[in-house]
Amino acid sequence: MRLIKVGRTAQLTRNTTETEITIELDLDGSGKNDISTSYKFMDHMLVLLTRHSGIDLKVKATGDLTHHTIEDIGITLGECFLKALGDKRGINRYGSALIPMDESLARCALDFSGRKALVLDLKLNEECDIEDVAIEDIRHFFNSFAENAKMNLHLHVLYGEDQHHIVEAAFKALARAIKIAKSVVSDEIPSTKGVL
Ligand SMILES: [Mn+2]
Image (cartoon, rainbow, N blue to C red; front, side, top):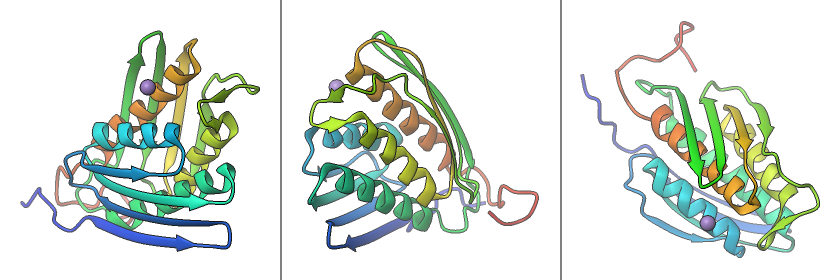
């Protein structure tokens, strides 16, 4: 049984009249990253995502508006995950994590099921921006990522005060859940249907 897969990578460029996004992903990386989204808070979150999930990730993104850019990063990153996971042979498929960030606690449960579902409760103040992005852009990112990776994503912040810590806890929980779910543990397709 060969538990180490090679070539679980994806490289996609998505250019529209609104944004230009290039992403390179290696699911079997070591946290190497080169992230430049034009938004410092998103850079911070994607570096966390990379380091705590054990992937390698390059992201270059520019665009006209924050909303468009962050949405299109979510779309392209999701497409990269779907492509890199391939037939999903041998992966755990499910992953979950409960992660604190100081006073905030986030829980993530996910399934690389081939179907999108998103249950998201970040307990964020709607009127508040976090550094250089709006809360609705963060929410949009998770939606676009889940939709295009075709995953079930259940991401909850159980409690927290600081908006930065809340989102950071959510990204770290997502990262640790991804780390488990993408791991290769057998040579079977993890579905009773024989396909994912
Ligand atoms: Mn931080």
